[in-house]
Length: 534
Image 1 (tube, rainbow, N blue to C red):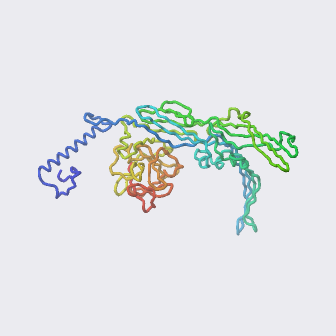
Image 2 (tube, rainbow, N blue to C red):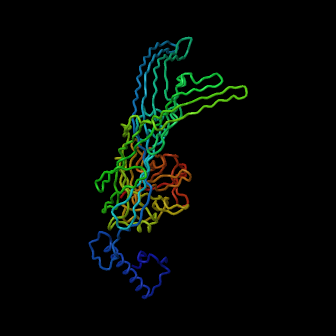
Image 3 (cartoon, rainbow, N blue to C red):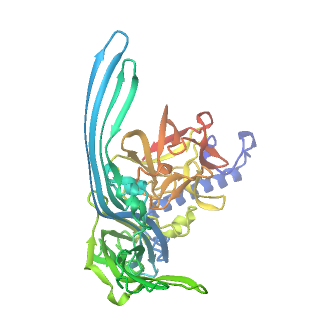
């Protein structure tokens, strides 16, 4: 006992400073006994312990606090695309001692025809608190003019993206020859028609890009035509100095009668139709404190509204008075919809048609409460779901520590006005690696042997980097998504259990800077980390 200073963790003394008197050693022995008894008490009171609970603090109970959070939006695509490209080519060549000469003939034929309507769905999740078993989901659904990258993000194959056009009507039929010949060199000759018919459409349909209409709005206008070679007065309105002409015309508006999705509540085994702005109730699983639901199967109804109209021109031509007037008149009493009930467009084939959400409303009975998360330095309303990783490559639960000090990387560091950043905590291992600020799940990125997605175990948030500062932070409800390079990480093995961590977006290595982890270093500046598996 005299040689072991572990009994005196708070007495920073050298052996020469230890007083040799009975009273000191009696007090020290008492301190050691008390510490041991306290440790036994903690073991006896630990969650899951079979020991006597008498004298233990009450077990953790859920904190049914209100929750309000915006879930990550999702894009969908309705409509259809027909597209095909056929190609044939043939090359013949002749070798000479000086050079190889060749001639290649080719021909191709392709067409594209389609109506595609991109939709964006954002969800607001609200739990009112108390002890209720339901929460509310309010969707915001908008049709929009998507880019080619957004067409790709919903899973549409490359040959059907057509530069992100909503209206596709084009064809190409070309033939040609490419050659390298003596005395002529390289050359190409090509001929044949190719045309994008949408380039001649009036605004807003020009070139096939437009914002599809939403239900309850006037729709897309400005597609107007008048038959100015057909005077309804048949010329009888012209009297020399006085003239009048009346021409028939049509205005064609694209309007939406309906836009909705289906929400499948997996907790209550119930399917509901949801529309933009309408609140929908979802259940909460008491055992996990989570809502689990799927949004998908879009249905978008569209029709053409045809409104007849007239265009007139009136003129006078006197020596003392000369003028002309022209205007359009529409007759809404005679408008019709074609087809009368519109056309239903559902999910575009070959694209992602649903998304599943898992959202935590409260901690389950006996589980970690939100108060416990706050005491660990977490957010006061951390409700991010564990989420579902799209990758089947799972590497388990790990912590990683700065190799020289042994201090663990952990979330919830308050700095720079934020509480979602990642920095270095203490060097002690977490008591429950399944749910801790200091432990992370690692998932493999398909096609990238050293690539990883990294998810914190306490509330399922994903590790990514902030573009402006390079700081590492935990982002709500990302999920594994190969399109988001900010949250992709590469582990470079240095041997002996040491690794460098590099962000795949900016190719910068991670280093410790003023207690925070930042992806803003080159390789020589990078901090080496040791990974420990649980």
